[in-house]
Length: 401
Ligand code: NIG
Ligand code: FE
Image: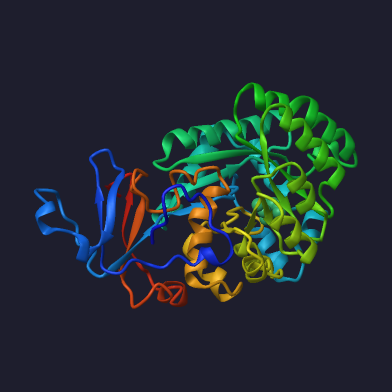
């Protein structure tokens, strides 16, 4: 699965990238792709004494680019899982003081080392499942001290992991407990205290707001994103998960790199996105786990949008960072074609992290980060046989790992 030089996102029908049959790929000593093509075009005499790896009838696809995760958290929320089984909704659990605030309480008690180790284990597991680039958000701190603690852990992960990591400040994930009933004061504190500290320490590339019913309003989102812009921090926001909240439009108005979730989205939102540069990022793992509607990926692609799919790995709404499953849900539940959904999980995910000049596709000069699949009858077989193991080998920067 290869795309042309300079292509940094694919929209609409162009997301269906055709595979090259009987292909070869050459990797330089520095771990970048030198060239690729069809077997028929490769002169055997050109091979010289290079090391040759036979893909044994497997396919070669780019590693996944997971553009939306919350992998830094303490403990889990398996207690709330029982509440959920007993019929409580995500919003009801949050209203009872569970949800994000439950994770914030645990995170406040955890040391930086504990958080780092737990998140590193999750990230290593994601990489073993095919992820080759990821975004990581704060948002379980909800005090200046704890948000900065999370962002420092994210920076350590970026140093420690063998894949690129992009970091997003999500202080506006929920109102911290100390500010219960004083949401306006929390937003003021976020703008006057948290954001300047995050910016001064250079800890985040992006800013996020949970702009949705029961969380932050469009007006609050507008003020937070305006403040972030003064520091040159671009938005990637949570929008339209719980209601048609106006989140999509406010994100677009601020030049958001992506608006994420989009389970409640109508024609107005699709049209607004079509007239923008903002990527529509959809998180089918959250719909699966919470029993919510799936975001309208098919309609979005048919309307010509660039759609990305991401895991939303977090303890409350998507306790999985398995992009293989996200790919399968994109096809089974969102009715994307296997090739479209793969582009959504790779190149467009990279674009939603500002990484698509180098990641998300197999391209000359780019890091050789790809997966060799086991022999499969077709690309469609992979998301179709969605619990059958299919990764034969994985390469990051030209190295088998
Ligand atoms: O993307 N919706 C907001 N934030 C997360 C869930 C966070 C949580 O429940 O811990 C999400 O689904
Ligand atoms: Fe999220």
